[in-house]
Image 1 (cartoon, rainbow, N blue to C red):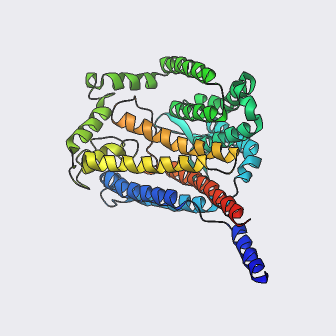
Image 2 (cartoon, rainbow, N blue to C red):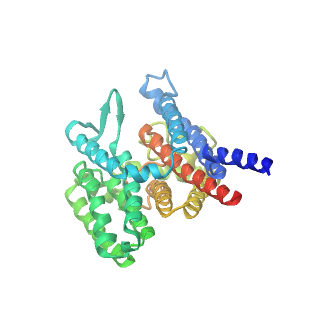
Image 3 (tube, rainbow, N blue to C red):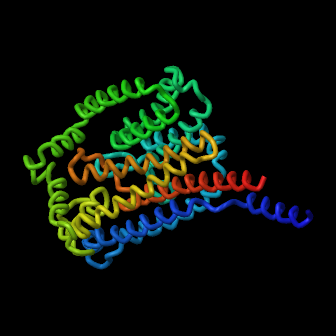
Length: 387
């Protein structure tokens, strides 16, 4: 009897210190990150040499590597924070995100004609990346608060919609259409999971389509993107240039590709070849088979993420995990659609592959939250097993 009590005490102590996270999800994530860094180097070294007077070939890889280390540290830290923490801090985080988005309009730096970045102590980042995470946390919080009332228009539409507008309005003032589209799609999925009546979601989708058409009509640069998408060959030297070069890269890769590091389009033919259009370089160097394997890797990680969400210990954690993994899924689908010209250019990067320090660090941190949910699910399961 005494020995059993000692064993039970040791087991309870081990549970309090934390149970292991979901290992398959972690391995898939780290594999994606590793492959992403390798392909980023291949896609960016020509541009790096050009930008540094042919002295440094790893400029972009070095910066991305630093952000990857920061992101992994954030992931480890967040994987040990209980999901209840986000439940308690959802509204304060929402207020901070809106304040950061508004600060961009006042103090933000303009890059390529868009004011979306702010600089704090020499660190440049996009508050919209933080806002995406905040919106998901808040929607999960509202889901728990609304309960079955989410099917009612007052809660399922007005409640979620009002919270979403608080973030989308500043983004619209920043002319950040890609973030608006991305967050809108993720919001619809989360509202569906929360229990919002599908008829309201369909009506909202129609209203969103009307908004996009009106928005594009007033924003010339967005209209040019649509024209380039439909008829890139009409202006091959300007608006259609990038997508045509992307298609050249994809087509020249064939079945097996030219070989790692042997892309031709990355030699300053394809703009942003290390950022939004890195998948075109992947297709050129690794071919259809290599690109398909990377897509399969993404699919496996996403499916595992949804598996974790469906088995989360409570409804808040389920909606939170599903929102975070949907964010990665939507970004991936939109990026691949743009690179292959199935969709007009959106400016959305490929998670874990495209160059962008803020996005990479935040995405890894978000995956840490999913790992936290898997950790506490495992902990709950072990507690039930020993009772």
